[in-house]
Length: 275
Image (tube, rainbow, N blue to C red; front, side, top):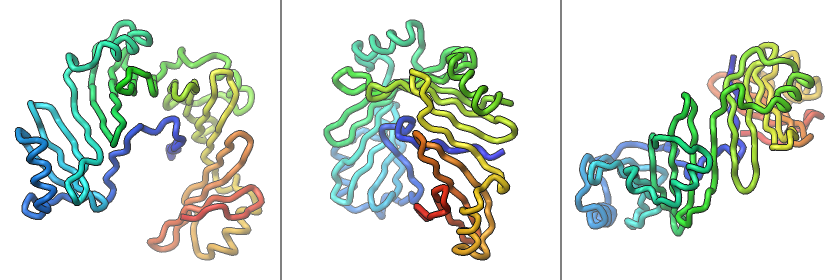
């Protein structure tokens, strides 16, 4: 069973360190201005590895036995910076915030992120096999909190809503609770009648978004007509339905030879987006 990918901003990390176009690069091929800037800023760096990412330079190194990741532009200016932290380096004001959510914990990992004028800390650990993540700014404000939930921690009202309107879960793959920008969100994902579903609820049990994996036979006829007319020769590899606050869209992954296209439709079969 294909697993749906949930891309809503509420579950995106504050920084994206994606490197889909990254390639390793030797020290000899680093511009002198970039290399000199790095060496001035990190004179004690060891275990240095360079990558070229979208025209910028990523360097991963260790300073005082702590991992550091730096993104620099072609002029040697630091764009983003990530540093591992010792537990002793976590400010007490941040530990106080964490204790308000989890009175007893052992920090699993702590990192400091700097991008421009923004500094944030990411701290995570496990309790009873479930991760908890905290994103806190340098002023001691909780920016985002995410907690993986055990089945019994999912509000009964949410489970009752899902069962009544969509059916009983065959299996729950994951459940999360997220606080961000004053919003409290529950995310529950799993299989219902052999189909993958993802539900997004607020803390008032209002369904904000629902995504569902579709069989070909469940794709509306107007959409199939558009596919047959506008994408002749393509085969449907996957189909998803998204209901975002009452707005329905369908996304199909279609393939012809070695070319894959993602097409989003409205229920009338009109094309909204192609990529």
